[in-house]
Amino acid sequence: MAARKKPVKSLFKDDTERGRALHATTANLATAFKYTTQEAVDRPTDLNEAYRRARYWFKESSFLRGFLKLKKSIYNYGIEIKAIDPAQQTALELWLAEKAEVGVKQWIDPTTREVIELENNQTNLEVVSKLIEDSWTSFFLFDVVPTMWQDDRHFAFVLPIERTVYTDTFGVEILKYIHGLSRKDVEQIFAEDPEQKKRFLLPQIILNVAFHEHFKVLKLAALGDGYGWPSIYSLFRLLGEVESKEIGFSRASFLLRLMVRQHKLGHDIKQGPHAGKATHMWNKTWGNSVLRQFEDKEGFIDVATRHDHLIEYPFPDLKRFDRLAWEGTNERLVDWAGPIGRMLVAKGVAPYLGVLLKALALEDRAKMGNYLSTIITDAFQPPTPVRLQWSNLIFTESRLLLEAIRFAVTQGFLSTTTSKEELGFNAEKEEMLKLDEANDSEAGKKNRPIWDPSHGISPALGETAATMAKEAAAAKGAAVDSKPGKPAGTQDAS
Image 1: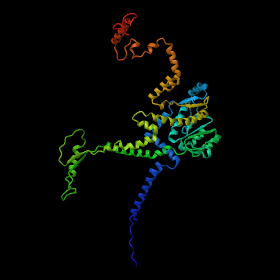
Image 2 (image 1 turned 90 degrees about the vertical axis):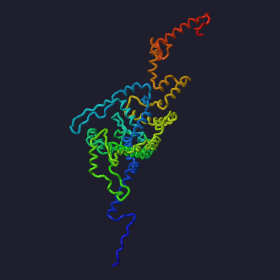
Image 3 (image 1 turned 120 degrees about the vertical axis):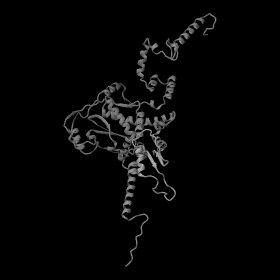
Image 4 (image 1 turned 45 degrees about the vertical axis):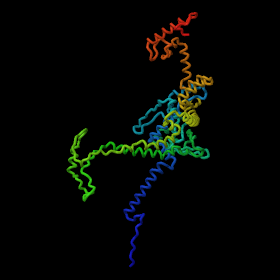
C-alpha cells in the first residue's frame, strides 16, 4: 500500500477552517473598505449619487455651507427687479407688493377628512426672491438649475436635482421628475383632472407641454452632455478627509470628559531572580485601602505615602489637537474656493482679487439674469416683462472706490447721480432732501460742523467756552486795528 503523502502547507493560504474564515474576513474587510470609503463615497460613479453626496456635504460641511452662503451674498448683492420698459416700473412695484396667488385653495386632512382652507401670506416679491435665492444655491452646488412651472399656477420652483433625470441629446431637452407625492396627495390635487391623476399616480413623470408643464435648465455642461458632473465632485475626497479628522478629534476630545487618578503601588522588579514576576510588593488589600482613602474626596487632601506609592493623572496629549493638523487641509480648501477663499485668509488688502472675483461674478450674473428673467415673466406673469440688475459696488474696496468716484466727479465725466448710486445712496431721495435743505431757513445751523469753532458759538469737540471767548476777542481787536489808513499795530492781522 502506497504511503500517503503528507500535504504541504501553503505559505500564503491556510486550508484549515480557521484559515478559511480568516481569509474570508480579510477579504470582506478589504471589500468593505474599498467600496464604502473610496469608490462609493469619495468617487460615486452614478450622477444622481454624486448630487446626493453634494447635498450631504452641504448639510455636513461647515466650510462649504458658510462659503456658499457668502458667495451667494456677494453675487446677489444689490439685486433689483426692473421693468424692461421704465414707464412700467411703478406698475411692477405695485404687483411685487401684492399677495401671491394660491395654486391649491383647499386641502383635506387624510386622517380626519377635515377640509382645510389654504392661504398664502407671501407677496410676489417674497416668492420671486425665494426663486432667485434657490437658483443661486443650486447653481453653486451642482452647476445646474432645473426650474419648473405650470400655466394655470403663477408659480415656479427649483426642482431637487437628485430627483430628476435630464437629457439634451441633439439639443432635444427631456426632463423626468420623481415627484414624491403619495396616492392620497395625487387624488386631492388632481381630483378634477383624471388624466393628470393617472400620470401622477406613477412615481416618475416626464414634463410635458401638452399638460401645461414647462421647464428650463441652466447648466455649465456642454450641449448634449446632460447635466454634466458638478465641479464640487473634485472636493469630495478632501471633504471626506475633513470629516475623518473631525470624527477623530471628537472622539479624542470625548476622553477629556473622564479624569483618571491612578495609584501606582509597589515597584517593578527588573533584576534578580524575581525579575518580571508578580512579586512587586502589591496586593489587593493594600490597593483597596488606598482607594478607600481617596473615595469621594474633592479639592485638596493631604496624604502620606511610601516611596512606592505614585499618584498620576493620565490625560490625552493635547498636542494631537494642534492647528498643524488642519493647515494642509485648509490650504487646499482655500485653493478650491478661488478669489473668495484667498480674500478670507489674506492679511492685507488685495485689490486684484476683487477684479478676478468681479470677472467671474459678471459672467455668472449674465447667465442667471437671462435665465430668471424669462422664467419670472412667463411663470409669474407680472404686468410687464422684467430684467434683473445687480450692484457692482461689492467688488471694489471702499477706499479705492471713493477715490475713483471723487476723481470722476471732479473731472466731470461722472454725474453726481451716478456717484450717489455707486456709493449706495438713493439718488432721487438725496435730491429731494437737498431741495428741502435749500428751503429750510435753519439749514445752516443744522449742518454746522461741530469740529469747526469759526462757524458757531458752541464749543468744538475738545475745546472750552473760555478758549473760544478769548479767540473771538482777539479776532475782534484785530479787525479794529486793521482799518484803512491806520498804521499796522501789534494786533494788525495784515
